[in-house]
Length: 320
Image (tube, rainbow, N blue to C red):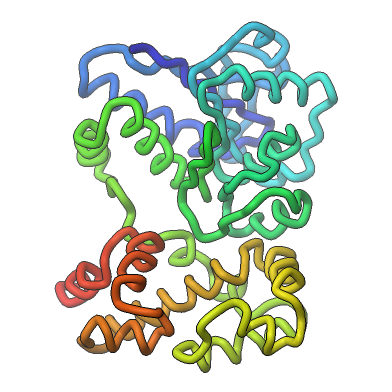
């Protein structure tokens, strides 16, 4: 098994978006003592790639030379201000064809903004850095953006959230290729979580995740948070605002880059975490307090959002 891992590095690329994933693949080669992954850095043109940190990268090939190149995995790394980067039609076509020829393709961090311009993300579930999730959703309404997730898989598409989550994505790709035990071993050697116990919500700054947007949406969010135990559905939220669920979804995606259902789940989990940090409650009571329909549903949602069960989260906090 040999896999070419190609990463497109645009001018001003975030260095960790490139070197983070590549270090995970390099560690796989080292631990397994064979060359499974071969890294390739692709540049837009022949100019040296100056990263946002000031470090200069040398590319293995240019987009113009990738006409017949078919890597196993093709990723687009993010860069501060990538939304202002405008590749010409020829470059965008080359990026699109690289995605189409790859076994799997995707992006790290804000690289999703460039990847979205290929049109290949339409109808797909993706993630990106929480700070540009709203912009991605607004520019491409056909893309389903999960602003909370660290990594998202949808068919051949693999996307990672902000910066360090590129390592999480690479580890999941290794797990796909080599199995869970190999990925756990690599994570241990890199001193990183195999599955992080938090998602992007944990890292979002309060000012950015405050009750933003239209005044009516602000009021709705305050009302839901105050009556979380009683709000059973997105339909109730829409009814409170006297609008359709479709309109409510559009408002949430435009303002926050996520659906009202995703936001409601996030708030339920946030409430559950808060209660678990304060006191010990029976699972059924905890579920009721947070508005979950039952303890089993709470466990499934909590585990999906945080990467651990409520019981494990409570135990972790008890030790800290």
